[in-house]
Image 1 (cartoon, rainbow, N blue to C red):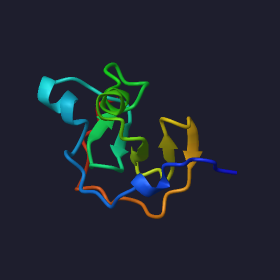
Image 2 (spheres, one colour; image 1 turned 135 degrees about the vertical axis):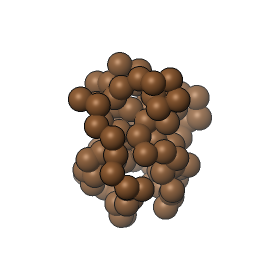
Image 3 (spheres, rainbow, N blue to C red; image 1 turned 180 degrees about the horizontal axis):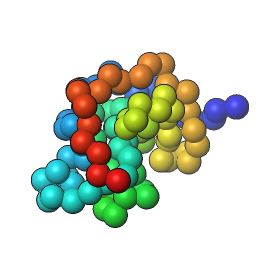
Image 4 (cartoon, one colour; image 1 turned 30 degrees about the vertical axis):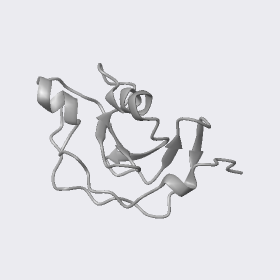
Length: 100
């Protein structure tokens, strides 16, 4: 049973980039993408070299991410450290470049 208290922070968002926003800017690679459901920031997962999705959480305190590439349909709350059910799935902006 989900006990997350942050469901009210889930928004319909427009993804900020067609890949990890920071990795694209710095010419780096990623493994999987995570989408912030507060603002639409696209960052790389913790298995990626730079862990930009987690860095975004620490900088903003936006709690909920969506597994974005490939579209995975799951959510995660950083604050409560648990999987959550999302009310919808965010469409991708188009083909996402693959690096791994």
